[in-house]
Length: 351
Image (cartoon, rainbow, N blue to C red; front, top):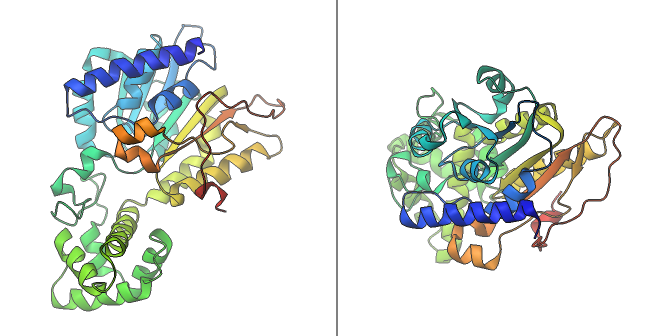
C-alpha cells in the first residue's frame, strides 16, 4: 500500500468510526478509491497549500476525508441545497477556514473560485452526483415515493425553478413524453404522459402519493418489481427535469479542464447511465483532442467492493471515473490501475 493510500485508509477509518457514533452522518460512497485518486498528485502552492473543490458537498463526507488525509488541504464546498450547506457548515466547523462554502451549482465553478479567494486552477475536483440519503429521507422534499410528501423535488428550494408538481400540471403532453423518454428511458412514455394529462384535468398533482397511485394503478397487471421499476424511473425523470441536472453536468464538463492544475485530477461518481455516459464521452474526447488535455485513469469505472455494498446499499449502482489534467504538450500515457480496481459487466459498454 502506498503512503497516499495509507493516509486515505486512515482517514476513512476515522470518518467511519465517527459516522458509526453519529447516525446522522451521511457516509460517502467509494471513499478510499475517490480520495486516493484525488490527493497527492500535484505539489502544493508556494504557500504550502493544496486546493480542492467538492462540487456536490452534501453532508461533507468527501470533503472531510480530503481534509483528514492532507493537513494542508483547503476545500471549496458547493451545493444547491441550502439545508445541506447549513448542516455541513456546522458539522465541519472544527476545520475553520480550511473549508469555504458556496450555495449554487458546480456548473458555475469558475465564478465561485474567484468569489471565495481560491486560485483559478485547483489540485482536484470531486462530484458525487444524484441524491444524498439525507434528501431521500426527508418527506417534505418529495424525492421518495416510499415516504409521501409534496411533489417538490427541487435541490434548491430557494430557487424559482418549477416544482415537480408544476411540471406535471403545466407541461404540454409532448414535453412530458420527451421527459419520460429521455430521462427515464421509459418504453411506456406516451401512455404515461397521456395518463398524467387526463388525471390533472380532474385533480391537479400536488403530492407524491397521487403520482405513485396513478402509475401503480395503470400498471397493476405487471409484477410488483416491474411496477416499482416504472415508478422509480418516472420519479427519476421528474427529478432530473425539475433540477436541469444533465444541463448542469454538461456545462461543467465543458469548462472543467480550465479549472484543474496540470496533474490535477477530476473524480466523478455517477449512479445511472444518464450521468455516466456524458462523463465517459467527455473524458475520452479530451484525451484524444489536439493537444490532449486529459489522461483517463479509469478505462472502466471503479465500482464498490462487496463489503461496501453490504454496508452501504447506495454504493451498489455507484461508478467512479477519474481523469488527470495534462501539461501542454505532455503525451497521453497508458494508465496504471490502482489496487482494488474492479471491472464492471454491462453499462460501461454503453455509447
